Length: 193
Ligand SMILES: [Fe+2]
Image 1: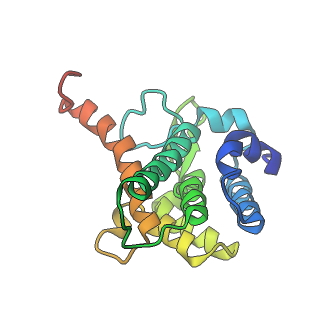
Image 2 (image 1 turned 90 degrees about the horizontal axis):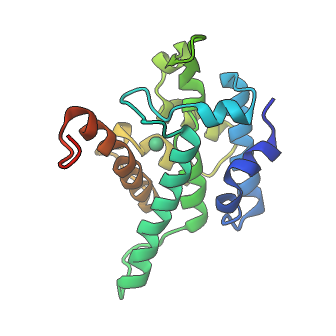
Image 3 (image 1 turned 45 degrees about the vertical axis):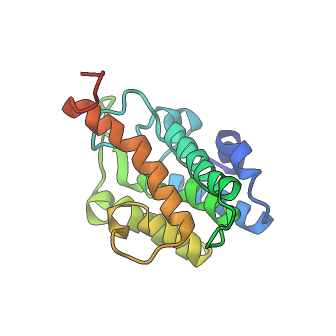
């Protein structure tokens, strides 16, 4: 069974950037609970899990994607803080990191092994896509509503909906790590045909 130490081993450097101890513990707890619900048993299983079923991941795992999106969202925030003389909104880096680490946590309930080395969408995933299931779980585990917004609205579910600035950064970092793979598959990534 996957426990808090396992999640710490996967995301330690990013978790350490959350200054609020309670929030950090809740992020870890949400991952542990999602792994339990989804039936994921070990870190090795998590390391092999693809981050999407919508296109070819080219070996990029769910853990790698979660790390890249969180670090990317932090970078999007930090360049604005560094280069804009005045920032017209307040960025909460604790919520940003927590939301980055949890934005796809619902995929632990949406994706399951097919028993033949591949992965399929689960029945739960057909009933509620990962932004919905992840947001429900985070709300049940008492994550701040702002973090729930990041999870609920980071993908198409958030289009046209009110969003935190941290949600915008997580969404853009997510799209930048997902869409090139879709373009690659379509032959639309110039130089990679
Ligand atoms: Fe994602």
